[in-house]
Image (spheres, helix red, strand yellow):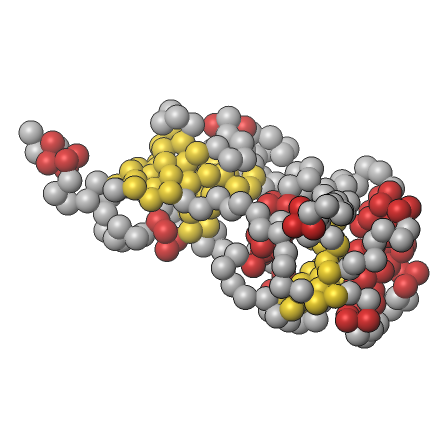
Length: 286
């Protein structure tokens, strides 16, 4: 059975998600619709790309992923480079259907895609702009699953919008990263990956500072339960991102690391290393 996944910022309070699913079923009767999340921060293509990066490969190849965040096209007739058209990207044998608002570049990073097509005919009926995820992205996704040749309704191109990404900043014996996601439990997920963290060596002492050095951790644990309940902990999660959490700290969806430490998305995480022979280690001898 063909699979479509949905990632949006629409929440579940209103009728929007149900309307999207109804539209899909009107195009394809036999289809499995999977909700990845509808709780993306409003208009955050960066967060949507992060969430999809961390789960899409678990789905069968050929799955179509609809990304309905910031999905309204922006057509600039005077300067096409400023336009954001709805588009399709084939990446690692998965199809992604989204407005070209920077999402595609955030999704693939430095990797190569297998094809990119733009839905050009979006000005002929401006009524579709009122609900573009349902009226533009859903029909395109369903055509893919119905084996309609993409070039019959979209134009192949190599041009897509490039979004600014946040990479850790590396200085002598220091890495500066950012919180890029806060999960359901209030855990702080950073943009610092294991390979970044250990670039100074695996045996070099370090201290992870956050919230303007009010809080720090100087050990990486293998699991949350390495510390007592309610204690702060740093781990590398299943996708190798550095994560700062509280062991069983989020009671009734409150009191997680983000709440206790007053941290938000984009806040800075600073890691200071003290390799053998550094100023700090020399001063410790006196």
